[in-house]
Image (cartoon, rainbow, N blue to C red; front, side, top):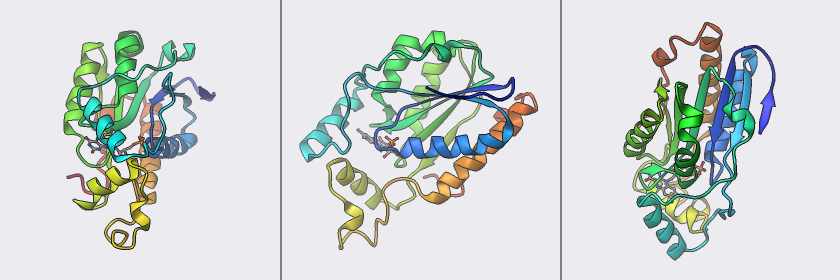
Length: 231
Ligand SMILES: Cc1cc2nc3c(=O)[nH]c(=O)nc-3n(C[C@H](O)[C@H](O)[C@H](O)COP(=O)(O)O)c2cc1C
């Protein structure tokens, strides 16, 4: 857990990342919040058994995609006690796994969902290659069952065009480096989110900070449309 103490407004960022894309967005968001004097508490979810990225084999990647489609839970370490303090806003964030929230986030809901989210203002942030809608409906449903007030949504998709985006993610998970393959590289320059998207995350962080300092009543009105079109 990482805490930066400032004013009386408090924000909890609960996040899980497998291949670092969510973490890059989270750290940009935190940078954006820095000017706002909000106390930001970061809680990274850590699986009990370390998951290795990349998975390294095509068979292993297919297996992970299949079990996550059936919403396999990945048990996580206990949360820091500070997570259960009072917060003006909780941002819960992680990747889409086979159209679902990731296994560690599902475990978080099973074990701590109600205690963590009940009566809290919650803003989900999703990192995905592009297919996030089922994840969003499932996540919103889980949050509502815990008694959370879901105030808005931030989604970042990988900006590469299809089908290269899907093939690229698959190859990356399987341990290949598609952006360095000569036949592939001109279609798929980079895995994951771009620097421009990180700048957008920083801008969103600043918007959230300003709104929390105004009282936070209009977080649902903040426009988190990204410049990169969502499919
Ligand atoms: C097992 C697995 C399944 C995935 N399934 C989806 C999916 O259904 N839809 C999607 O848009 N992205 C999917 N992705 C891609 C990730 O959501 C995307 O790469 C994300 O940016 C990774 O974030 P992270 O680095 O924080 O883990 C999947 C990734 C993994 C590992």
